[in-house]
Amino acid sequence: MEITYSPKFAREYKKLPIAVKTIAEEQETVFRKNPFDLKLKTHKLKGRLNGFFSFSIGYKYRIIFEFSKDKNTVYFHSVGDHDIYQ
Image (cartoon, rainbow, N blue to C red; front, top):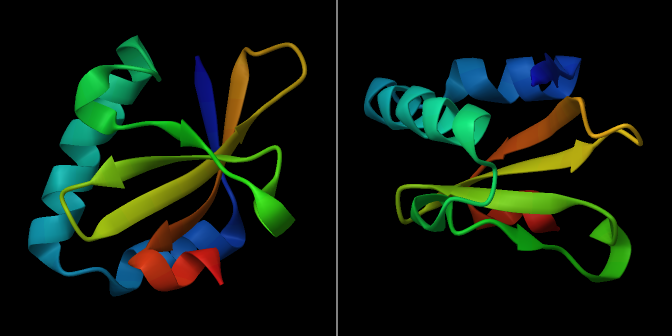
């Protein structure tokens, strides 16, 4: 599986605390093996983010992503606390 990081994601990721970045890297490793692993709490989003998914980085932080049509590429769009849903 290939992961493409949006410029917005890269900017937001740089601002995360180091401890959160460490957890994010661990969660990404799990994600690459199985995007729906129960540890990630992956779920489909609704409303204006319909068609996107999210998974957890610890308790407070999330990554918003979407699958490509062929399902071989995943696009990471945003990372942050619950405010990223707004």
